[in-house]
Each structure stands twice: as structure tokens, then as C-alpha cells.
Length: 112
Length: 115
Image (tube, rainbow over all chains, first blue to last red; front, side):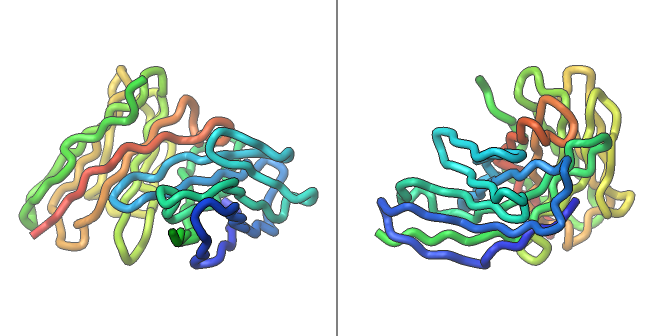
């Protein structure tokens, strides 16, 4: 799987928007961009995913650059419960099954 | 809709023993994958099963094995436990291999401590 680069940590204030960046310059045309987050003492939780177009769901929005070499996860109004490690992962949609390759992710800190 | 269920939640074993962990995927999901999470190595892929067949395996020794049953439930086994096997073991399910088009749902994990 192609690699992603994320900042180690980010800090934001409660009730403000948060933009979490991810660089994936070696992305291929068949790679989906997935975001997961992991709260303390829990398993990872699926957040959102996309291929080429921007995506919205009840949890977040995913903005994908036109060249697909970067993306941004947007939390529109952060709460203390959004404090977690956020992982940006590229998932090959072709044949075979290699599992998700997790990097170190971004540790998001939310200040009250 | 029930989520991914892993049992047991916590386990303490002695070096040299073997252990079996269980995972029940979301109803209708046929893909089950396993991950090991440690503070030093982070989340690492162990293996993935789809329709009772192992599709791929991560870089772990042969002491780590798994299987999937016809009802999609999966078990993983670790034999001859070592202290370094202490970790959070996570199971994830998806409706198709790799979950590229619809993502994975993870369980809460089994915390294994080897003493």
C-alpha cells in the first residue's frame, strides 16, 4: 500500500473546526482514501472514505485535492469526545487482501 | 445492529502457554481481519480471512494462526506465548476483502498480558 504522511499531533479548541491534513503523493488510481480514529482504550473507528470526490457524512467531511496527492479530514465543530488518534490510510481496491497499513497517525488534542 | 464482538476482553497467560481469541463479525460480513497493537510497533496486520480462506498474512511468526468458520466467526491462536506477545488484539470485519469501498468495523479488542 502507498504511504501517507500526517503531522504527529494537532491541537484545537472545543466547538471550533479542525482540519487534519494527510499527504499521499504516491497514491494510485485504484487507492481509496480512508480515515479511522482511535479513542483511548478502544479499537479504531471508521470515520469516512473517498476516491476522487469530496465526501460528507454525519461524523466529518473529506476534502480530496484535485490531483489526489493530499486530503483533509474536516471536523466541523470539535468536541472533547473527538480527542483521539486519527489515521489516514490508502486502501487498494484491486484484488488480494493485505490488510490496512496503519502509520502513527495524528494525535488530536481538544482544549475546552 | 450488533457490532464486532471480541471475547474475552482481558486475558492473562503464562509464557509458553497458548491462547485462543474469538471474533464475531457484523452479521453479513464475510471478511475478518486481525491486528496486533503494541505501544512500540503500533497497529500491525496479522491476517485476513474471507469465506473461510486466509487471503493474506502479515509479517508474524508461525506461532500466530487463525481460522474462519462457515458462519464467518473467526478465531486466532498464539502458541508458545512470549512476553512480547502482550498486546491489544483487534478484529475487524467488512462485507468484502480489503474493505476499500466500504471500510472496516473494529471490535474493542482483547487485551492479552503474558507473564
